[in-house]
Length: 333
Image (cartoon, rainbow, N blue to C red; front, side):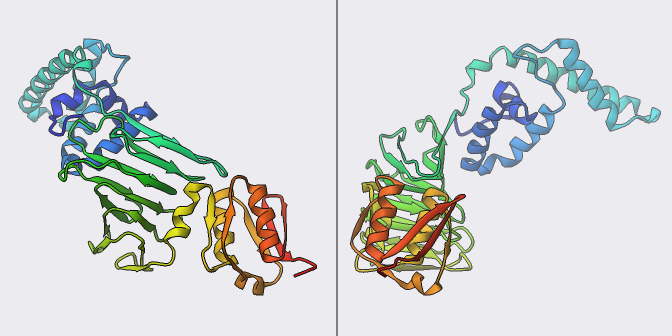
């Protein structure tokens, strides 16, 4: 989709008219994404949307009498007073001219490039690898989604919107072609790099394995240049960054089908990861168990493999009932 656009082009685009009238979910995804990427056209799009709502779209062919009838109805609501007939007549003339232009434009629907967007989802316990338009790769973790424009050559740039968690391997491009990841409350700008984004929690967590990443808080505009080996997240207010170098391997390791706990990760954090990945709530028989520390690496090839290994590692009894993971100390613990 080209960056500069006019109201006339919007009104002659079948996809836009469908979006404006709320009749096409696919069109909604396309245009919602385009507006996010081009906020400078918000007022123009809104004006065109209001105009389009007065003109029903009928499967690429609109009867001329229907268009004029709707424009007449719009004009009639502006002023029904007898002493304003002259103004009304002028409005109808303008509306008629616009309708004629619209009818001509509908015949050129395919001339205007439409902003096709792609969206990928994963269920609990599922991961998926997505190849992006520039050759970059995204490993999408469980219970996550990503959305982006199918064509990155139309001036919109390399931009994706992530919900959940993803591990990115970004293909290097010229310096003026940055790669941007949008999450709730956070904008991540990168060049060629390898990094993980967890946006499942209240505060997005970004871990950098290679390259350069610039983080920007949407609420405050605060920025942070992340170095390889660093993990950063926003504070409770979403305005300032905090970071350390101890968690990066842990946050990135899932892409290699394992969880790397390092020298020690509290059971409470492990249970949160299980909830995010497999959709299991949990109940702990004794709150003191939450302080037990998992260390080393555990395979996450499957939920069963993970729970068996965790049970042995931390001397726990783990049982799933009705979607809840019950945690208690084993007889030997």
